[in-house]
Length: 102
Image (cartoon, rainbow, N blue to C red; front, top):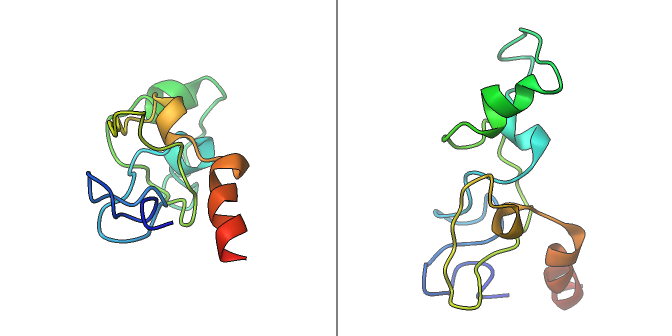
């Protein structure tokens, strides 16, 4: 739990929104596309990739509480949205925390 929440070589939390350093480009469609409340212009299905998904900027919506895949076996973490293996949140990555904290 400590490692996931920031006691690791990168001093980075792998839980989005926890601590001062956490993943900013989570591989998640709803997090990476701006809300219609901020930009009401239509975005087609394939437009989301060119306009938002491939943008080199933090997600406009912070997916608070999501746990991303995290670093590789060498503690390297490439936190770009297109790196789904390390930046995609899932139920099985959060499972480690749920089991311990339950």
